[in-house]
Image (cartoon, rainbow, N blue to C red; front, side):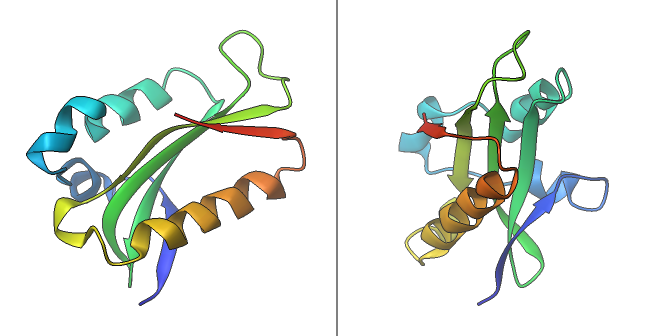
Length: 115
């Protein structure tokens, strides 16, 4: 199982917004469509599709700094979800490791908050 992170684009947009949570999880997270729209408001947001073997199965979004203060040495992971049909398969653990590696590669983050 090859887990990767991919930027959201026209090739995977429909697949990402079609992902679903378990009904009991839905109240904990805005929709992926809302999150992608939110990410278009600032270049401090970094939305990513979580893919397994090239197919979108999850969504993650992180942000450096805050609105109006993009130079902070802080990063917040605002969204993280794996489709209900692919949960409990170790995908989330692999995806979290990948996103932390991606954040570290920016060489600007001293602290990562996960909400």
